[in-house]
Image (cartoon, rainbow, N blue to C red; front, top):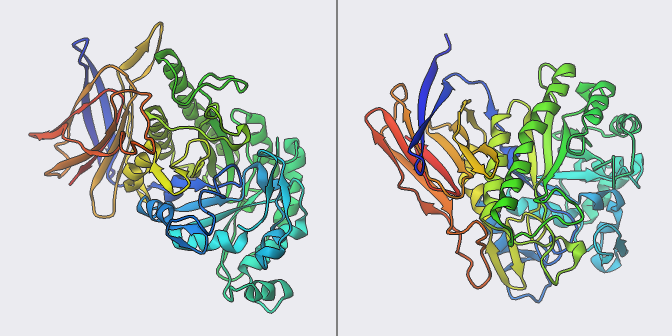
Length: 512
């Protein structure tokens, strides 16, 4: 018989001296797991994400393997990134993989028409990317060119990476220095096929997907996880058509792209660092729309796939602001504030709580582009507030999901309100329970008293990420303005867990 633990939260908005009651239900025999792939990352040939990020000039005075920057590798290994999506993004549908193999001085050059019109020298190609993944201990996720490529081109790329046969294409990989197959299993069949990937209708794309997928072959030890190009934001018709027209057995997942644009205006998205409380509040409203999108797209998928065999893969998400002053507008370089940390935590809580359907995601992007984990300036490197969120939340990777229902106090701004707190929880293989809270309220601490008498635990520890101002950032001169600290605001009081969440903070607790 399933044992249900009902826990009572009492949340006090300290400034008002009023109480809010919340309930939490945890199931001891939950069969759901929070997939580690929710914590995936994205690296596109865009700005200084690859060149000047992962892949640096041979004369740059930093530790390198070949031209791969190792301080970045070590930082990402610490947070255990499970997958890395490459080479795009919009770039994927103009990328021809054969240009990126063989002697580097003989590789053809191309123009990156999507991002700044820069010259792409193809020095970072398939082998370099897969060497990076090996150093990171992460799984590669390739986005295949459907927009300007061919079925044969994609099919040969899969053969090149995965076949151990005596075929000409497999022998070419061996001649290029890798005798054993790489066994790449994650393959996206196109990217944003509704837009930069070909301006296709969903009906046309569904047919193209089936044609391409028919020639995406499995090789020994490398069964493919094929991911269909899914909807832009709230294009529910796209999801409906894809799920109706493509057999569910023929795709591992369907992607979803949604960016938090602070102003909601793509022509003037808003600054990464200069915003008032009104804009902050509107930004968080738009961030929380991810809950609605995941819920509604999942409901459509449920109609055609009630057993939830097809994953929803949110492989582009994050905040998208105007670029920093003086930088190339095509390079999408933006700073990363405490607001970004709250956006990251909130999205990850949403994904964790929908782990029955969301089994993959990729933050856009890893280095120097959009909501980055890491920023660099020549030999300098810093970790952003978003990086620290992934460091806190890594405890949820492949852990047992603990479902919960929280009635939160409101964060009020003018005549608008939104839930002040969002949360997710899991239990790891050692039996430790981890609870992650994000308090979006800029002004008020929130006290939570929770009865935990049916859970065996003796101690609680925690980490917190917060800062004096929501606009605070880490800079190359002051790289530790926002960093993880020990959290001492939780304690055991009899059978109760008592927590006080500071304003504008993210807290992860460990109960053991």
